[in-house]
Length: 205
Image (tube, rainbow, N blue to C red; front, side, top):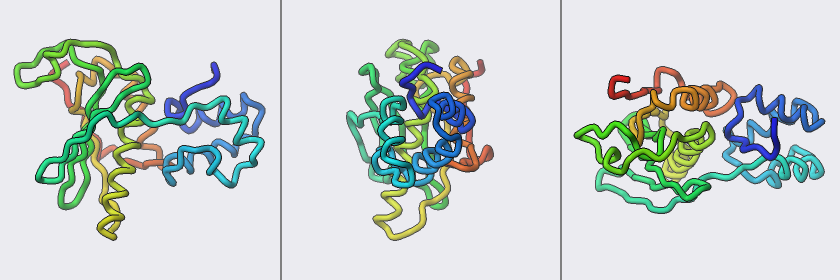
C-alpha cells in the first residue's frame, strides 16, 4: 500500500493491513474505525485512546478530510441539496431527504454523466470521471453527520438512513468503486447501513 492513503478508501480489513504495514498494532485500526464511523471524529488528535506518538504518526500516513460544501440549498419540505467540492475542484451533488420514518441520502457515483437521459440535467454537463471509493463514502459520512445534527436540534434519535444511488452519473459505469464503497458503508462495526436500505438506480446498463 502506498502512503499517505485516504482512510475513507479502506475497508475495515484493509485499514488493519495498513496499520500493520506501518508497524503499529492491528487493534489500532479498530479504534480508528470506531472514531470515524461511530463517533464522527475526523481529527486524529481527538482520538484520545490512541497514544500521542501513534496519532502523530498516523496523521502523516492517513488522509482524513471530508469534502467542502460549496453550496447548500434547502427546500420548503426540508430537503437539502449539497454541492460538494472534491479535492481536485470537481463538484458533485448529494441530497438529504427527510421523511416521516427515515432519512434518505441521494448519492452521486460520477462527475457528470455520458448517457444524456432526456429527463436528467446531469447529462447536459457531459462526463468528466468516475468518483473514487472515498469520494462516494464521504458523501454519506457528511450527510450522516448532518442528519445527526438535525436530530439533536429536535432532541430526538436519528432516523434510519436509506441510500439511493440516484445522484449524478450511472452507477453501473462505476461498478467496482461503488461496490467497494457500499461494503464500507454496510460494515456492521461502522455505519451499519442495511442492504435492505440501499437502492442502486440504473438506466438499464
